[in-house]
Image (cartoon, rainbow, N blue to C red; front, top):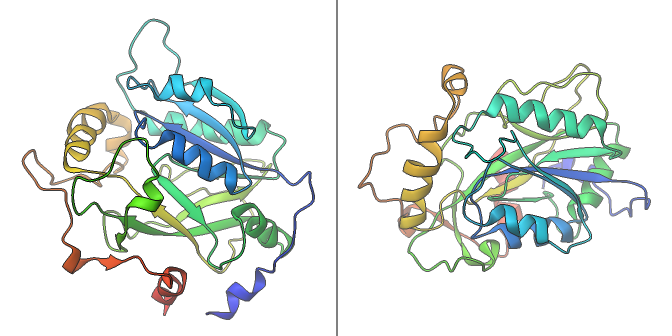
Length: 280
């Protein structure tokens, strides 16, 4: 393992070291309970921004009994009206506002279809972020690893992290930097690439990448519904003009969204080592 990861030592953070996961969501009912559990087990607090879900996600969030939930809201709020537009610039600004006014030491942009982990075993995410903090860095970059369904066997409501076993590094937008965790407060934060990267004056990024497991598509039917009904029609003109929302460019109805195991990597007990070696 690269020496840069040796900076992360097993240290227990003080009780008042708070990491806030800010989670914008839209129609993620099939994995919502599981991701909330995973974030709570990672030692993070949770604030959910619901963008007008219609599938029960909002109701689940409001009724969630976990101790990690510190807040939730519908944004933008339109009383009695369906929110038909996903305006990433607006949501990004709101994420920055929530982080900046919180009492957290660090904030993380954490989408519902993700699972974040340190690049070394034996550390919870909160512990690893504390390790980065003690080294004097104020931002963390993640390596995007996308898990791909090879069949339609995923059962909504079960643990997506335990279910999906095939992954790739080169799926979707690979070229972006995924700087998704930062120390707060900062005088000004910006999201020049939408949800992918946070920027601010004096940013010092930890030299090793944490791991961002991504589970955007969970079955053929889920992919068709998400892409053609819940994402592409809702993208704002502002976001498209900025060159965002390109991950489904070129897809069309009738495409197969199931992966071929022969072209993917299978999850093994050496997953962390395999991912870290991608740096060379």
